[in-house]
Image (cartoon, rainbow, N blue to C red; front, side, top):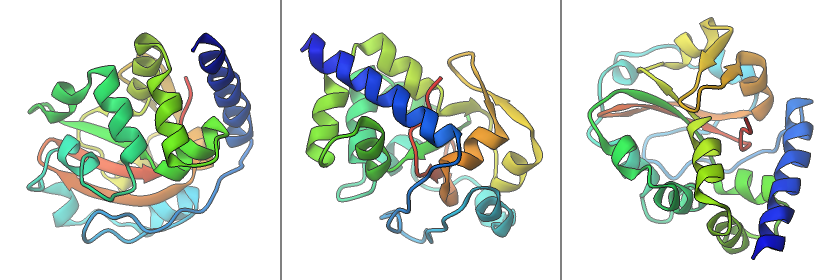
Length: 192
């Protein structure tokens, strides 16, 4: 098991370096109802104006969006459960989540498929996984317009995510409104 963890860590670091240098992948449209997939960093964010719908809380929590069956977030779901972040992302405090797709995890982990990505995530130490996931969450309800306006964001793990790093990750969909925040779908796993 420790060899797997070491391999996963090295794979994550290698892919992070590629992602930070502008590499990204295309992703299929999100399985979240009513969400249109858009590829491309800042252009995707700029193409998604703030709308009353995005600014208003939706009926589902962030966790309920991630836990939808047959969605784009099966690996993220396994990671959130293992890291013990379900209560945080199911609470009443407002958060903005940059949610990597299943393909993002497969690519970042350098594995063959979604099942292998889930197994790799489940093999990571909880503290390391929590740190990685917390780097995908920031306080407050940030629509695509406010995300584009800020040069950087303070993440829940204490790290700073720059707009350029987020843009390099590739934005697949924006402004999925939850009752407790907003979800933006990304094409890469962000690494602190």
